[in-house]
Length: 209
Ligand SMILES: N[C@@H](CCC(=O)N[C@@H](CS)C(=O)NCC(=O)O)C(=O)O
Image (cartoon, rainbow, N blue to C red; front, side):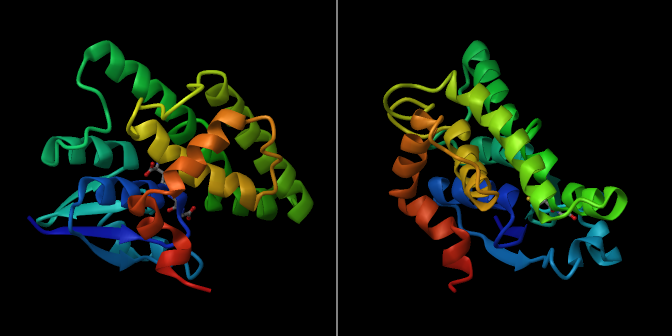
């Protein structure tokens, strides 16, 4: 099976998928879509992902978009370790937690949204930081309230919630959010960073300073 990830080193959504691919031990080839150079808006890339976003995973030429769908597919193709539980109730509860980040937090601080705030509403750096801090803080607070006191969201091993948390904490730091109110989340983030799967997927690993 040939896997090609349309990727960008600093993209938090692509970072999720890189962590999942590494946890599964799946071999893949990364192709950079440079978001700062607007390569995601090029006609050629729109043929891969009509939403003009990364990540997109090509599986033997078939494209899967949306990080949640990609991680769900990976669970089917590489069942160990499982990232989304099989049991219907556990599965629903796990996806609900992951969606706090995927659906309700990251989209509000995505590049195109922040660009629009600047271009249409004259937001400056301070206003953009305040916007990002507000929405990331809301999402992390909801997750912290449901976080385990010990171990991962997945128990003794990470699941999709732990996977999507890591890039969101990275973005929280980028927008200078105070992480003191989120002790469980920062503990999990630290544990995740000790894993080789995360170390190999990190933006700094892809693009050393
Ligand atoms: N819901 C999508 C979000 C994808 C997304 O927002 N990707 C960002 C990078 S993290 C992007 O490509 N942004 C380009 C832009 O805003 O123009 C997913 O989970 O895959």
